[in-house]
Length: 297
Ligand code: UTP
Image (cartoon, rainbow, N blue to C red; front, top):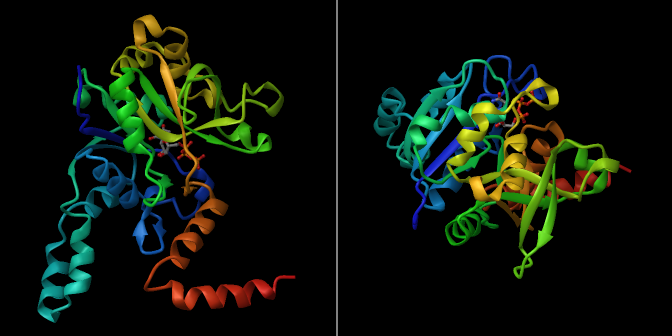
């Protein structure tokens, strides 16, 4: 029995079409949220939960992602020469964060296809998946609970968020049964991006998963679904209805702050929400924001 999960897979190979032209030559995961690229928050979250072996699934324009987690000796030398220790520390923050590995997806055939690219690296052990454009606020930890549920129940675990029914068509939606724990449900079925009237609930899957390795066996034969992409949700649906062979799927309901930085409006909200609480920016930003909003009427 597994007592400790150490591997995280971070898919970051999507086309980011909602963010064009910013993402023409740069992955959307590199867009700065205040002063750090979105992907750094995600790797920091993985490491904070004890997941120190990180495999990133990259696509075209992968260089910026790899470079961000590597040393930049010229920049370090200049900052050392200037005696600028604070900025040097900022440069080095991402360098020693985790044991980073990279694999290319090739064609972006969907999230399920991206996760399948991790099969060789992960092997036959449970592992976490963190979407590279989805930020969970560090003050509202989620992964710890998901990892412990995976270990005690020995099932796959997904994160669920209650959304307004008018928004469910943007997500995978879960049909559920309650458990003794108000934050944990058993998933009986999943539908990718349903119309509001077809959604089994308003519980949406968000970008955190702790999966049993059987997901790879299922993804091997998962056919393209919505958007002609190989959908992770379709593989999880098969696992949810075949618990004897795949271990089944549970959901942890997340009630904290989460930012979808792949969406332009959510991205802007993320920057404002995170910046107002920062010691170095909040003091000046808060009064400015109040004054600015009073002009909006
Ligand atoms: P999204 O559907 O949000 O990414 O995938 P996208 O396709 O890049 O977005 P738009 O709609 O064109 O703007 C969710 C996550 O899955 C990854 C993305 O990088 C993102 O982190 N992904 C998606 C892959 O790694 N490969 C894929 O083929 C698709």
